[in-house]
Amino acid sequence: MQQRISTEIATSASVAKDAQQKPLLVLPDHWSGVPLGIFPLPCAEERGPSHAADPMLFLVLSGYSQRKYRYNSNVIDLETKPGGIELKGRDYQREWARWDGTPGFTVGVRFSAPVVNRLLRGVSDFNIATKHEFFDPKIQWLVNELVSEARQGGPNGGLYSESLSCALLGYLAKHHGNQRGFDQYSGKLSPGNRRRIIDYIEANLGEELSVSRMAEDVNLSPHYFSRCFTASFGMPPHRYVLQRRIEAAQRLMLMTEKSFAEIAVDLGFCSHAHLTRAFRQVTGITPKALRRSKPDNASEPS
Image (cartoon, rainbow, N blue to C red; front, side, top):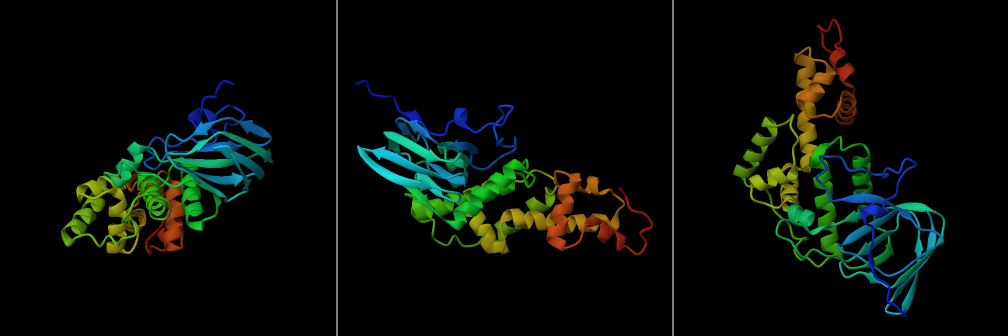
C-alpha cells in the first residue's frame, strides 16, 4: 500500500473565503503582530496525514463537531465547540482525522520563527506542547482582540497588535511552552530609559509607533520591554500612548479651531470616527461636547 504524503495544516490556500473568494480575514498592511487567519471548521469530512511546520494555536469561533484523530495507530476522540482551544507544537504529526458535526470557523495563529524572534528577540526555538480542546479565558480574549483589531483594519496601529502578540507569546511560553523565565519579574525601566521613551513618544504622537522600535531604543526585546514599560508607567504601551494622544487632542480642541478630522490626522488616529470613539472611551464625553464647553465658542468646526 502506497504511503500518503503528509500535508501542512492551515496553509494560506486553506483559509476560509467569502462568496467572492476573498479571505474572511485580511491583515492590514501595517500589521506588526503574529500572523493569523480564519479557517473553515470541517464537517462530515475525512483527511489524511498532516503536520505543523510552525507552532500554531487554534480557537474555535463557531460550529460543533465530534472528531477522531489517529496518532501512531491510536485513535483519540475529541469534541469541538466555540471557545475551545487547540495547540499544535512543531512536532505535531497526525496520521488521519475525521470530523462529524456542523460547519463553522476557527481562527489559527501561526508562530513563525522570524516573527517570534522579532518579538522575543533571540528566541529561535520557541515551541508549545500539543494540547487538544481546552478553555482559557486569557488566551481567548487575546486572540479575539487580535481578530477584532485585524477585522477593523488595525485602527490602533502596529503598537496594539504588537502588544497583544507579545502578551500572547509570553503567556503561552510560560504556561504551555519550552521557554523558561517568562514568569520572572522584569523590573522597571531605568530613569534614563524612561525619559528617553517619554521624549520619543511625545515627539512622535502623530506617527506610527511600535513596541519593536521603542524596545530597540533601550536594548530590550519587545516582550520584556512591554513588561518593563507596564511596571514603570502602570499601564501597557498602547494604553499610555492613547492617553497621551487624547490629552493632546483635548488641548487642540480647546485652544485651536482645527477640525476634528485634522486633529485626528495630526495625532495618529486613522479617522475622525476613530478619534471620537477613543475620546469618549477615555474621557466619557465626545469631542463636540468638549468644544461646546469653551466659553467663547461661537461656532463648531466640522
